[in-house]
Amino acid sequence: MKVFRSMVLVSSDPQSMLHGAEEVFQRFQAEIKAFGLEDEVTVSMVGDIGRHDVFPLVIIYPEAVTYGPVGVDQVHAIVEEHLYKGRVIPEFQASVRELSGRIAWLNARKGTVPAEQRIVLERAGLIDPTSIEDYILHDGYAALGKVLTEMTPMDVIGEIQKSGLKGRGGAGFPTGLKWSFVSKANGDKKYVICNADESEPGTFKDRVILEGDPFSILEAMTIAAFAVGADEGYIYVRGEYALAQERLIQAIEQAKEYGFLGKGIFGTSFNFDIHVHSGAGAYICGEETALLESIEGKRGEPRIRPPYPTTHGLWGKPTLINNVETLANVPAIIRHGAEWYRQFGTPSSPGTKVYTVLGNVNVTGLIEVPMGITLREVIAIYARGMKNNRAFKLAQTGGSSGSVIPASLQDTPMDFDSYARAGVSLGSGALLICDEDTCVVDLARVLLNFFRRESCGKCTPCRVGTERAWYLLKRISEGQGALKDLEELLDLSDNLYQLSNCGLGQTAGTPIRDILKHFRAEVEAHIRLGVCPAGVCPMHEEIPASPVIA
Image (cartoon, rainbow, N blue to C red):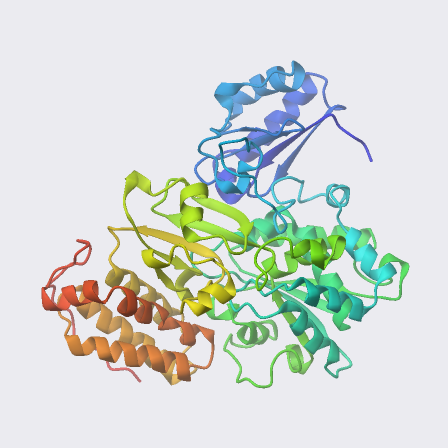
């Protein structure tokens, strides 16, 4: 494999592409050739590098210098000064002080943002995601080789169990335990499915992994298939993720050419194939049984459980379903061992967690930090504090279905057990940070509007409950509410959790429960005083009567 003295990486996430990343990439190719550097410098387009205020970004190795935003007219100077003469151009560099935690490790120095320990994102943004050779160069397929030549299926499952890896989709179910269920299930055919639907608002971590490091998911799925005895897999990708689908399909083709997918993988008797299935934009299909229905060509509605997918999944066969972030941990665990993985995070929630940081903060983007970090640390260190020095009021974790976290809980360790003890959930990892100008009634109204529109309508508690809850919140936000509405909202929240058929309905009442627990005085101010303390709600507007719900 040819070794180059310098490597140029150009971000190619959708926003970068809109801001001319393709043109910048082509100009780099032309300028490198014009200076006669094509045998010394390689240029590649990579996925989302993690900064979302500068498009596109360019990183040059081995110096790890980050330039941005880079326009076509700057490329000649970068090639001449940096690549040809070896002189960094400070005025073109992205500000170190403003770097998000996602790429701060590139410029980490004493007194600045601490370096990240990247496991899930160890390659995303650093390799060419369209090149299997680049992936192999960065320890790609070393874990699969180890599994197929040195380990038994039970060895693999045992290592995942010892690592303590828990599902990163929100539920936090022990990954090794789920693998053991599928391994022990009776069936002449088994499947492995990667849930890459990622339809939770505010969450885009899976997209970054799929676009920036697609081979890692293929390798992880292949390891999982060997462990549970499957020979076929599906990646269910959110329909809007066109670039991710394109790179996955290309990665599958290259993996087959290299013998890492298909028949006789690594010269063994193990066979495994992967298919890419595009979703159609339904939030409900992120629920694993609705996802199974969708793959089978049916309407995306949750199944009654039990039986569970581990024994009766795709086409009634035992099926292992893990989300993207969960699977992305697997190759590193196999390569380095469970004890290495347990160095990070907390004893009950080992490893790292990828968060998308959004809202009223100075720096938004993607970070990967050890489990157990606090919300205060995320805001102060990685998000660079609250925007305009406003006071922190609340954060919502995990998109629409996540908990509303008040300021009083911002020092609670962000791991599954600590949050459960505090009566909140960690969710999928989207952190919506809100300042004092956010109205909790308005926030809950918007969330319930989302749930009522995304409900599949299969079960009555969700179909009727989300509609009624949204209507009551709308009344309160417009100055038409009554105190008795709060008790009805609590009843609706409890019924949604207790009686709904799937996670959508079960979590739809979470924002109602949380705002009435932590911000009841603000909600009551809308009713008792007829004012919105945050000055957001359009008070005293006439609204129509409650709709008739079938």
